Amino acid sequence: MLSHAEIQHVFQQLRSGLVPERGLDAYAVGVEKPRVELKRQLDLVQHSGGTVKFLRGDYGCGKTFMARLAIADAHAANFATSFVVVSDNDLRFHMFDEVYRKVVTELATRSCPRGALGDILDRWIGRIEEGMIAAGADPDAAGFDDRVRAKLDEDLLSRTGGKAPQDFVKVVQTIFALKQEGELAEAASLLSWLSGSGNVGATAKKRAGIKGDIESRDALAYLRGVLEIVKAAGHPGMLIVIDEAETILRMRTADSRHKSLNGIRQICDGAGDYPGLLWLFTGTPSFFDTRKGIAGLAPLHGRIHFLNPSGYTSLRQAQLELKPFDAVRLKNVAVRLRELYPASDRQRLMTLVSDGFLDQLVADVTAGFKGDVGVVPRQFLRQLVNVMDLVDEDIDGFDPAKALGFRPEALSAEEEAAMAGRQAEPVDPADDVPIPAEDNW
Image (cartoon, rainbow, N blue to C red; front, top):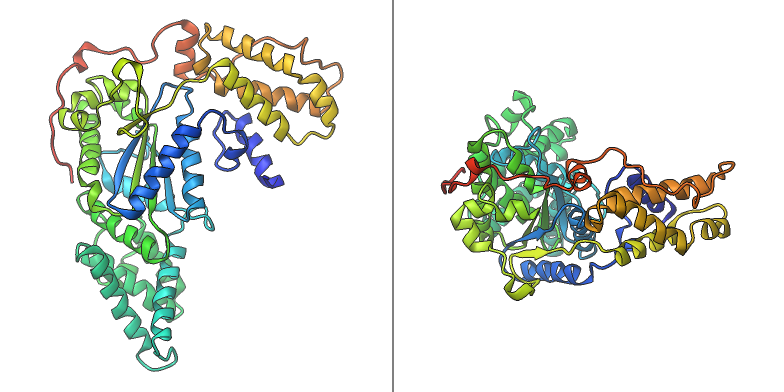
């Protein structure tokens, strides 16, 4: 059962054509098998090395929905998570310091929905203090804090095999010391630095004995440190979602695109060295299968190549394929949302937004997209929620059956292409060249 606030969140997001961050379970239809596979991946990383999984599907298949659902399932299993959307404005994937900053800024747990690093750090320190007290240490004795700092250093050294950057260790120790001294503002500044911020004053850095900011070539080592703190705080691991990876294909220069794809290759190559960490990338078939994308980078393509013998695909291969919506699944989602809708007069809602009306709405929206059911979910759900809103508001004279007729609004490039009966991303022959393999970090 969802709370009132969660139900309101679901419908407010759908009104804007967005995927809700909470309450997805209430209308998750037709995703049972992919969901089981992603839970299997979480179990694997919890008991072995880290790994990378790719969600593959055309526009409208529900990749972002599935990724958000994976986040919810990870929280239910007490994992820490981070949901990052690739952008060519504030997140250039070939600049891994930017990726690191986004990952840590969006770090979440089931009790802390965003910016959870501080809470995780406090929980880790608390567990260390509790362990020392249980072993007989007196928390009021002189030198107890110094012993805790030494234990923090020892714990990080042991967990990372000595691979955590020295500045990482210095900052963690200094944050602890500043909090013990009541200098919370300075501690918060250093926490911002540890989260990848480039706007931390020199005074705070001087307190920790560090200079400069976290650079791209060092960011993966810092991520290893964050991962180990996450696990030391009592979480079995961490899920990082990189959504809309196909944005990389639209980067302005081939050099930026090549470096970003090579960054993904390096993450895949090094994933096993990050036990407890699952990376989940979402992307369209053009991102995976064209030479402008992963298919052009032979070392990466060879590793995650999508296998589809005679039309049969295993969910356990590197790329997890999501099937497009069909009319039946679309109606089932609509029925779930109708049940969830907080109507003031439920009988009136069920009468006016009947099963027959839902069938006709599916047909109308699908017809508007030239029969392509797979691309319609976002527009369909916006139309559906708007109709239910009008019914619930009891607008004089409004009859859903008479108001039927698809009126698309705020179309995406993919939706415009579907309505025009063309491909959204035509392949440029100039991009049909091999991508050189190179290390960025």
